[in-house]
Length: 548
Image 1: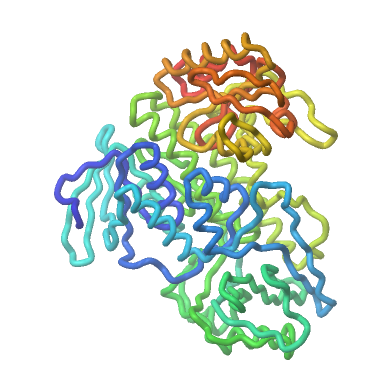
Image 2: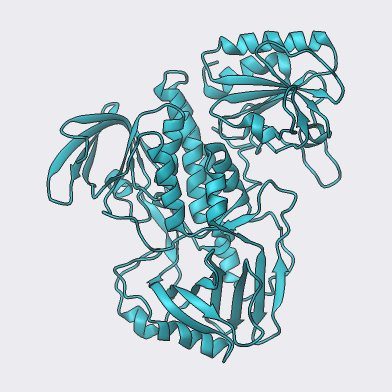
């Protein structure tokens, strides 16, 4: 099995090489942790299980260093063209121009290719065709019995194992973790096709199309087309006819290649029924049928083994939340595993993974089920940030890796300044000596460290206090940096061990609401761990990781 053989050992073994597993392996490597990633499939899937990338996931990609590659390969999704019961089409645009990123469409196979190439840059290759035959926990180690495509058997050991192996997760089954929930009673079908619009139905580039015909006491007849980056290509989805559904067997969540896929004629028949003469489908690249389930694992961890992504939560695809939630699971878990593996934090820090991420999945399931039940609704006014994942917060969650400090002052009417557990916002127009272009706060937060962001006034005494704080934090044995934000025109000398920027546009003050001498501590995954008086930042850091 490649370079690994008999009784091999690794710090972490990741099972599953979809977007979640690839993200986890790459993040572990970026944090300096040795890992292996195993995938039972011998080749990447051609199926576009996931397409939409949320603004928050793009922020994760930026931190990882892959956002440019993703954007170059994708298509910005700008809204929805909706028509119900033959009414005129109306376009509902999505305005996210005040966020760092909008919503990107990129087929899952392309996402996996980019992430695999990124992972290879750390010297880690996906071990394909390797299936896990058994998993046994032996104290603080985990034993995996592996099987290669040719039948050869091998044994591997790791301190931790993470199951990123999808809705039918072998790892979850091996742990006997309940995966409770239910499935929609009707099957769906979808395909990757070229669409032509002989009439005036054609949506603008980057706009999805949803055509509905409501029916009493059952699901609406529908034709949904999501644009792909290739010109004129769409991923279309709709209810599957009973004849096709009957050819499958058993319950399956998501796209299943072993179930018979629809023909081009099957897809065209739905288009003709809902919009006669308005849509012509051609060049079917692939098709599949699937069912939608809503399930949540009873727990995300059993001893030294964790679950992430579809292995622990599945739900309707409304809003494109599934893959994104899983990627953010991996992003949350990686830095915590790294600190524990390096002896910089106690093992109890790992308990915060489930404490933080399981409530997020519960919320996603509840929202996507509600929205799916209303799929034939008017598409009227709703929270424009609902599906961006920008508002995901760990504030107030028992067991979260955050420490309550000072309360944030009230922001502008309708706004809330960030508190411990919230996402750290970006801020534009920051100036650093010797750098010609303005910086963003995300430029300063990027990396694998905690970052203490401290507001200072224009005095040298304040800067000296920041130098002292930086020295104390440097002695904490934890990865941490200090960023001092001064008002525009402060003209202070460069401090030792501290990154000094001027808030030229005032955007940092507006986004964070910090007064002189106040600070926020930002975790490696871009969430606030604490806010309060800067002099207490080192003590707060120890409490966050459980070392205090």
